[in-house]
Length: 261
Image (cartoon, rainbow, N blue to C red; front, side, top):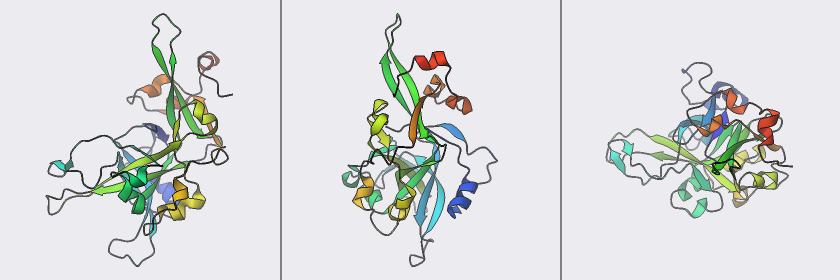
């Protein structure tokens, strides 16, 4: 499961890199886009491809949007005016089942996105060899060995309160997960689904369903550049958020972690 990740992506710079339209709130000040401990229900950066509103015949364009991490299905009822009922936090969707799952199948057809990130966290649970004998959660960070940005496949939704004539749209999304492959299986049996740039056109196409093969588990070759390394247990709490979460452990600390070799 991908339930926590890190991002240092500046929307303004990313918009220039991708030749995309920045629809995020860029008035927040420099540095506020950095989040080393992104958790579900927060607003996250996504990449979509959409037509200009009311101009379906125009060429669709890449757009950067902020969305709530935790997809809200279209049919969700309102708890109060303009506020959806709280349900299960749908921050992950299985890539192999999303097309047939009621909460995601509509999004699989026409509302797919990319979620840029530096890397994601997973935890290995091991018995404590100390006197207490309790299980210990040891965090690892998965990222590109060369430090380049990852783009994960996602789905998104637009929720509106149907009881209101003028309901503000609420954008939300989920990250697709797949079976872990290669050395990453030693960390967790699931992983977010990477989407290589050569498949972006087909994946983001707002007018056609994506080819089924894009939802398949990637080959070991496709994720060969991703490495896992142990990180401080500070990441265990969402209250902690800073570059220290990604600091390299000391030799003694790392000795207590599992080896991926």
